[in-house]
Image 1 (cartoon, rainbow, N blue to C red):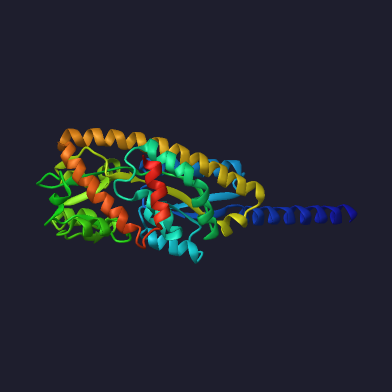
Image 2 (spheres, rainbow, N blue to C red; image 1 turned 90 degrees about the vertical axis):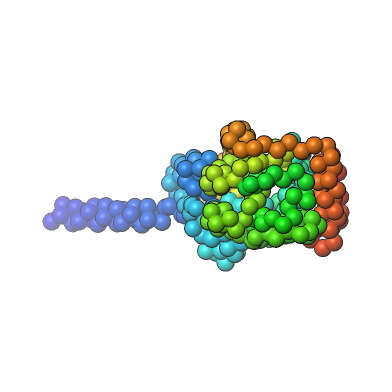
Length: 333
């Protein structure tokens, strides 16, 4: 009888242990929900998958990065809104999305301001503390920067040598970008078409737009380059981005797991920067070989410099502080 009671106790303890084990496993994988416009097979997707694997391994499967691909959570303004109300924990954003959280970051993408990675890196490193503090004050942690590529002007049926070549044309511009409208106002006589990412290709197909300014890799992956036939070899600007996570969500993790997510996030961002810059440069080489390449003359460039200077002066009148633009102009030289 005593043996039977002992067996029952052991069985009960074992059953309780199994139950607790199941409950522990059920609670173990804390999902960090991250949105991106990238596809899982893109260079961004490959790095993000490696990041997710690292987090899963280093947290002993206690934390899982759950990615929502291909803009299934909406455009970047929508992603930021969902992070603010807790529907999403993080996102991979371009400067437009980062600017929805801390507007001064968007100034890094003022047209024509930074045209080489080295100049951008110099300015971004100089402004890093201010930018990251601004993000933190808004309730977000910037795990790392992630670049998108060097933007080029691509057109259909005509070359774009000077700002006047935009007149009477239909360039695409991003719906949430406050920078391009100012540029087009300075040029004058332009009818820009505000679009979100999924809308660009259909509008190229119907000739609703005839100019796109975008990084080579992004344009190639999106299928836009097959609809365009001319590319300006000069860089219009560097398109940047970053990995962002809600500070509140990070704080909910154990200190150990929080450190894993932030440390591996920084590593992922660094890897992404290197991979994307290389892939974008290779894509530009392919596109230049297929399209008519336009090299700007010194006179053409002088006309652009004048227009871009007027654009920056206009942006000082309310979009950004004059001090910020003056500082970035100094860092760009």
